[in-house]
Length: 260
Image (cartoon, rainbow, N blue to C red; front, side, top):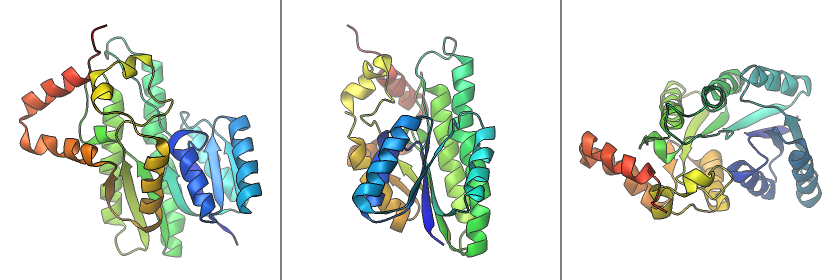
């Protein structure tokens, strides 16, 4: 039977670019996102250009129950998932007392609950086959939780901790679990308020193609975690040498908006 790589959040950003780069390597794909038009178009293009097998499934993973439904749909189609990229994610910016609780609960479902559900369901199959790979998309904020991104930072800290501990549990099983940790990326993730912050002004977003390239290498051949970019690697290590109270003052300043 054909083997597939499953990518969530495949209609844009890192997921979209990874789909293209994996297709170039003749990997069969299952693409998941909310946008049917975008996925249908991408699926047709990848099939036509690279001659691979591509399936797409429309699911909103900010509803945790849909992660179970996604797994069931893949089982019904008799598709074998040998690698899983938990890429789908969203973030919010603003003072916690003013941000939307509904949006934050959906973010927790998407960034954490659905990621855990899919990992749990597919890793059991992988362990039984004694092979498989899972890559979770964390963030620089997993190392540097920022004010005004309080819930988002916490979700990405969870993703990194979950990834590293699961990887340790699965040593010797043939299943490898990794974490990709990018900094700012030039995608639709950043809204107008985010783009005004000193953090974005001082650490320019990179093109998602660059991050996807690192992601493909990590997914197919790597181990552990990968921080994308030398500046982001430096920033991720700052807390080791900087007192906590001073580090938080720096982060609060960077997360604030530039005066207009």
